[in-house]
Picture (cartoon, rainbow, N blue to C red):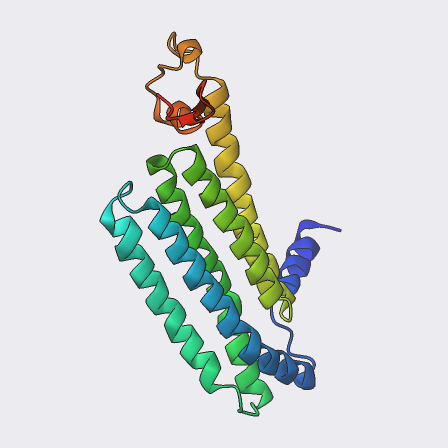
Length: 210
């Protein structure tokens, strides 16, 4: 298989097929039930992450960006909710699915970029919440998008690729921190301090990391 054939195969794989009108209508009707749930999961998870970082991260990250993301999700929820009882023509169904396919990459990028922007402001537990947020939301989105394979794969590639790359770089930076204070837990590097977990005191309670 040459490069041209491979690119055509990839393009076909990530596109919405039009050769089966009945399948298009079935996918559309399934999305009228699945998409509102997906966006509600995104909204609730996003605000949960924002609340845990309030007081630590800037207000525009913990309130401003979530409000914008929530508004965008609410618009899409309203669209799919109004479409529940519509019997769409194949052309209309294809247009809606194609729009969802394109929005999948944009939405995945937006929520991923926002969650990464919170990482420098959190401690080890808050960073763990970022990782948990990304894992749970991407799994939920993939399940909700499973009726359109291309959209589900786009979300999986964007989020998981960014997740693995970002935290591999973060962890490599942490492991290669070789300043003199590292061994004494007095390292001033943000990435190193963020991964320091609280230490157990003699009375059984946890003391904050330096």
